[in-house]
Image 1 (tube, rainbow, N blue to C red):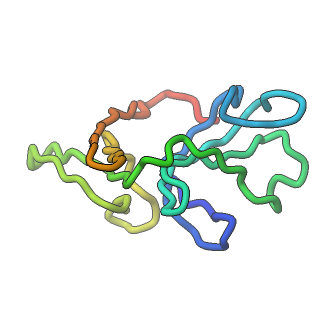
Image 2: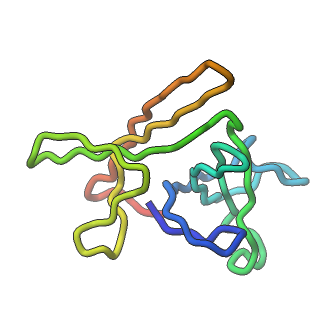
Length: 137
């Protein structure tokens, strides 16, 4: 979880990850860009979105993130955390900060809600946990 600055100037905590190739989610005239930082979020006007930018883009630090809509039918994204001491799950509407309040805890899973008309679907996605010794991009 990382706090990023959105195009409208606000900051929001989002689930972030880096891939060696942006693939079909990154539209670029010459083809997919390499070394792409992604953030997954929910935006009221668009639904479930990926915001992204390549580490190879010129002026990347002053340019806005690019946005790809994954599903306009998404209604929300929620964050589930497991407390091993209490042996209990909690699901929050906003990401949870650590006890020091400096950074965000990584959720164990996210819960996505999609709807269209009378149809509604809730899906949970388990997230991999970073273990000691893993490299960081």
